[in-house]
Image 1: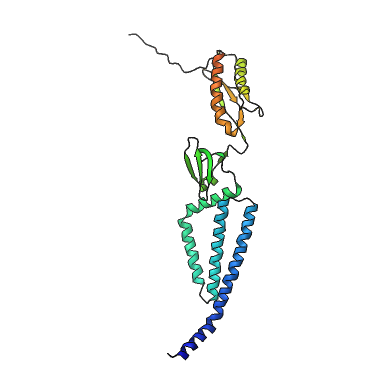
Image 2: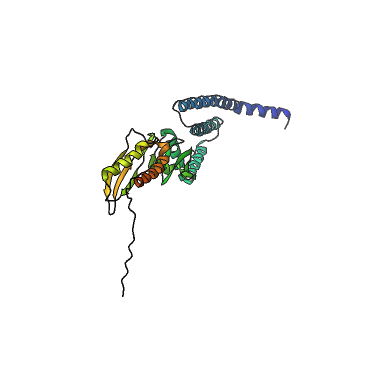
Length: 270
């Protein structure tokens, strides 16, 4: 093959594919510019709606990759490559990945819902999936809580978003539910006054809503009083333990008996 033949084939190749290659390059440049504009617009919307930062990064990367894959498919088509089979392979691969990661995709969807609708946020005290703890971190697939005994609790977002969530922090205040039983010989009015004095003298007990003390039950061996103080959410355990101790001391000081189980031993002589 002489030089003239080589030049002739190069000219034929350039005339056949040169325009397509130039067109593909232009499509890539213009397509990349359009993708950047789309990503920038989506980011503005997410920032305006105060989406979680980790959710923003994940969704922006996902959209970016999807758009770039579509751009590559368009460029291959421009170069004359058969894209029908390529699209079928991508669809089959997507289906296989979806089936294999069915549980993970459910957790991902749950994480997206939690970050968009925000039923909980970092620092909230919640009860969910049989666990109680403070929200430490909300990730795409899991949510981490710090338990009451300083345990790290990891809950899949799929289960969390589909189950019941009790958020103790949202309203800012909590009611502490306590029950004290006293002897049937005790004076009911005196007992209520003693218990109410304990509640009103505690600086962490709120006066609005007002605390209440009521007869709850006439039990087998005691008259049970429902003691219901309100407090700020962050003071719950201080009030719970403090009021329990103070009520016991106050009842003892007034000579009001708190019944406890007794055992009677009966001996039968032969």
